[in-house]
Image (cartoon, rainbow, N blue to C red; front, side, top):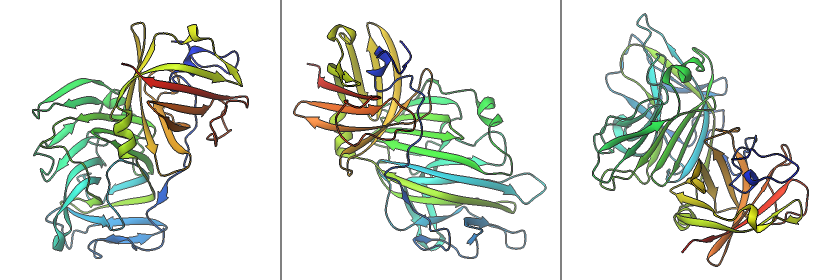
Length: 364
């Protein structure tokens, strides 16, 4: 497929911004840590505190931790969402061991001990587990490591794991993780589609189609691990809720019926035959047998409704393209900007240079 350029209008501009060098947007994110104290969080205050604007979880050799414990966010639960944060993990022991993670869509198993189980976005001081998806406590069906780092996985309706591809080499991902320093982590959950990213690189991509074991919603919590003394720090925790009903409504095969770019209609022959399949926050574009893929999140609470698109292939893969969308009877319209720095569109009009408006209808 053509990569997207500014002039003239090219086919890539149609395809949910495939190939665009884009910029990350923070619209719609809510800070869930005030940087001062543990208001809105619940955990063992002998282990958890705030230092230098970060949440600190610390264990000691004098009072070793015998079981994993968690700091639980008390101001809401997680269903469809995107979480962004930074972490730093330090082994305060001669074994070099330190492990932590973030629980989401999880269950409180022992309120007195702050024990939590469910989906975990793992990370560690070692070379293997940062970025994996782990079933802490067996709450998601006792599936252990649900995706190793670098894996693209489908858990089918019978609970069998199928490795469907790769999002990158584990050693290449590890090479970007800064030891003893701050790293950026992103977790995206839309329906059964779960994605983790560290320092901008995808680490796992999981589709959980096992209805009997998949987790739909639950608590968010931060882990400190049992074992040798260690410490973990979290800062800049920002959460954006998803739009579950709208996401389900988007699950269909779509065709393009009209496109406007820079205030001009695009000839129909330029997009004839292109289809876009959406399934659980993922999309696949098909143009006469050539396919491209990506993922997106939505925020249906905003006016206009917002969409952040993440191409998975081509130039701009892993970046975020801000857009808006609306329903039109049996169709929908998506408007986005092609000009870096111009921000998210505020209206469904392509009259300004650098704006593209695409109209879709469900393919019968």
